[in-house]
Image (cartoon, rainbow, N blue to C red):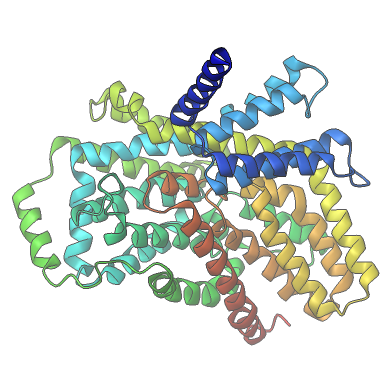
Length: 507
């Protein structure tokens, strides 16, 4: 009896120990485990292999675990990579499976994000970020929403010349936003992010997809959209730089005008009016004095990055001088290190960058494997068959195609991968359903949706993990605001955009 009692106490002690030290929340962990096993026990859908369906189950379970905050997102990502490797759902051997699981850690897009975070550290270390933030406050700082509009205008000015939306929103605008929030004492580390930083971070994020949809050169996948539109129309409708900018001008400007107001309603800043901010900013700028040597190096580096990200050498000297955005980012980081503006310890201590490398890499890996294993093609064909068999009118069918294309971005961690995997199929189905007189508005709605879908998740595009990783916006708020803004912007393009395209004689 005594030994039995001692055994029970030892078991209780063991459970108490694990409950205290194991870094996961028990109830969300149980729910997530049930989701995984439920999906795995379901019959494999026709058209998918058992391994492909198992990969779907792992992906969906990972998303559920992230939403429920079972453990830190980096831990969940590492667990997903481990399960993919051990289950061998992407390969026929353990060696090939682990190679697949780790493949995205060499993805140039992910390293562009990571290096952009490293570079942004220089703004804080040199004080240039604070100076830029103070300049914005001095110009627009009487109200927080005015600062939001300043960030949106900054995005709009840079967009035509920055083909990497990640470099623009995450590498240039985001450090400015953080400096402005910091100047007002809005810091996630202090629990004061909602004073101003949460609002400004959301404006920073949501300005990025809007401007990405306004110019062909504003984000990398846009030329692919142009190519697909030309293919499905047999080259009869080809979007040039000028025509794209003209067609997207009015709806894009309306989105940009309304977005800071909408976010102020969805996530209002605690500090709204800042009547003393202008005098404060001017006083601080005076105290800072002239630009330091480190600040001049940062300015020169940013100008170099902007010129190279905008492909100015290629425009002048030809395509042979075109540089990959990630290579350019590494050049900028190297310039900062060899000039002593930041040092290697700064790089090593930037925890948010290394965290981003792991969790974003895992999500990109699973999205790529979903495409390779035929899951995305299966989904597209299923949708096509369903629409054609339903006999629904062309208007709801066209709307359904746009909505399915946009909201299927929940399954992607790369805009380019999503467009590559699904857009051509969706455009082809759409032109089979939509009357010829309305082909162009349908195509333009799909083109705009390819940028708008970046609003949805914290892994939707390269800019997202940079801003999310700064800690100003919680996961639940990010997804709620992302969904609402996605719907609002789609409605603006559907109404304002179609009226504008009617005025331009496109239908």
